[in-house]
Length: 455
Image (cartoon, rainbow, N blue to C red; front, side, top):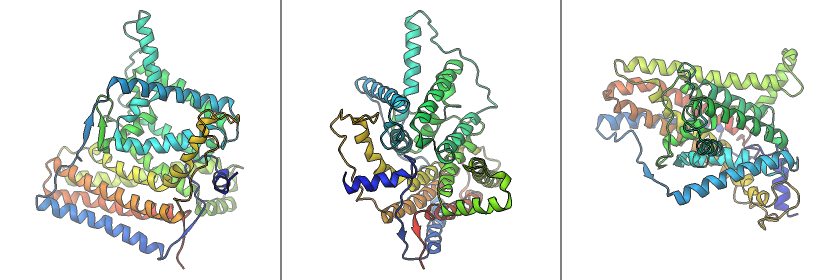
């Protein structure tokens, strides 16, 4: 086995195929505080630039230029079929293949190629997940079969989704998904991952049958909502495929959960969390269990609640300053989407490029049975082009760019609602200050496991 492969396997061994784990550290040439102050300065100057451009009539449209196109049927059918077959293969590999997460296709494909890679792709091409969603394809196949067998209405019962429930089920699912990845280390067990996929398939298809596919996916299908939310900022969109979440209760908690889960992942993998657990073990040992599950879940919920409380309080103040306009909380919460994507890039960039390459090996031997179906089983990833230095600079650039885009987008959205420039600047100041705080906190948390502090 080559040294490159040995290095990569060693890097993965500690955490299976979780979407992080870059072991090398980059030694900063300046104190971390300088980096944080510089990043916050850029974000703050963006607010000033947005205010000045609005007063001088240079604000421009609040929505980015979007290219929309329609895929031909000759492309749609093969894409859906291939995605569905790969979905079935992944579950089969998880359930009956090797239980070594490095030898099984499922962990790498699910956590790296799909969960991380699809998030990036969905932010570039809106509607791409609707095109290849295997659960949507499964429902459509069953629905078409029912119609052929003489049921004109298909398999959907058509129950009404309670409006008051909104997207709360998706919020709980997203927090649970993060807990399974980070706290329970689901990625380390292909069999448990396969069982989770089967359970979710039953729940998801059952929800589509009960409430209809469109209603269920816009309220309770966590994955459809995540990718549709990221698609709201996509510069390219597939016509008839791209969907945008409608305004519903818990939309703000859901978007905040997209941010908080990535931040918690960074926090949980750092030395600060181990120090926190050590102190807690001395102060309140009754709260500790052997695997740190209780503390991990409480930590995840606390991070999400703190982010949500900070945003909700600031948003209420901004909306109060905007009255009597008809600006809604939903119109502003979607402007946090660039930050959610930025945190994802900062946290998972190196993992996608390094661990994601292994999928070419694993597709040749999905079960870990020493197959070589595609002739790539002996292909070894190139790990030399991504190091800690590049990863750190990408993380900083992503965090700064995400917050800059969020401030600019939110300001443009307020102006598009007819708010005068002066009042818009005053109303957006609280949210912009919150963005500065988010920038500082996220950089510190992301830096801790990635860089060595300047001495």
